[in-house]
Amino acid sequence: MTGKTPRAGRAIILGGQTGLVGRPLTRVMTEAGFATLPTTRATLDPFDAEAVARAIGSFEATHLVNTVAYTAVDAAEDDRDEAYRLNRDLPGRLARVCRAAGARLVHLSTDFVFDGTKDTPYGEDDATNPQSVYGASKLAGERAIRDSGLDSFQILRTAWLYGPGKKNFVATMLMLARDREELRVVADQIGSPTYTVDLAGWITALARTDACGIFHAVGSGQASWCDLAAEAVAAAGLPCRVLPIPSSAYPQKAVRPPYSVLDTAKLAAAIGQPPRAWVVTVREYVYEQMQSAS
Image (cartoon, rainbow, N blue to C red; front, side):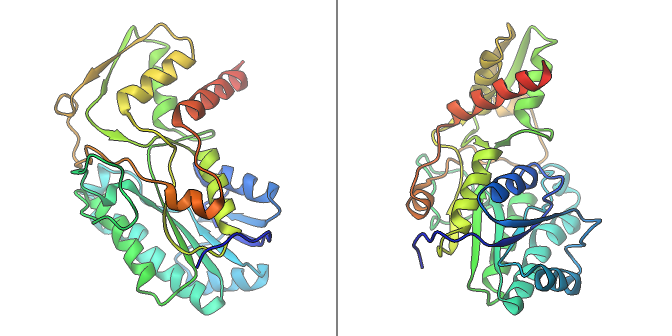
């Protein structure tokens, strides 16, 4: 079911007080007219189904947004149980609570559900084949939501996040570039860099529609990690050189998809506008970081 509606609603945002996505999402949803209740795990344990149900009831929430996840991709290889607890068990439990409460569940997933063997952008219906514990656990979370019997859900697959307030790849590259003459960055992994402020806007716009299902929500265009780092360093006006290296020169425990660009046509149709180009948003982010630091 698709179609935009002008209404806002009342949203509980799990992780909304502290998360890389949750914090900008709380601000954007509030500015868009939603009543918001951002939480931390201390103020509302997301695994306590009865407490979540009570919160939905007392807040009269129309939406439950889950930004809580196990995102340490390499650590997940040795911490499988906890990765699955957060990425599979939690979404399934929240979906069942939402079904009983009559609320919509909004949940974030990842490009890591794909194996990266394509050379054209992945659509929502393309075959999944995760190559890491992280990717497999996130895919299991998607399936847990679908298997819960909840019809009113929005799963947004996103990727390569950067934004204000929390550690992220772009911020790390800028920090290193201030002290080094050169950076060597992986250039044979291609994906979709995504600004968390824009992601917050898409989540909010989608939440105001009747569209349900899985959506790809990433910045437009594609880049390697080296491209992203180079663009950020250039935007900051730093003299550091950014040099490409192969993945084999920077071994990591978890297998990354070599190509995980996502097609956002479905999202654009649902919210009525395409995502901005990642080059534009990374420059915006860098400029805002420089202004806040000055």
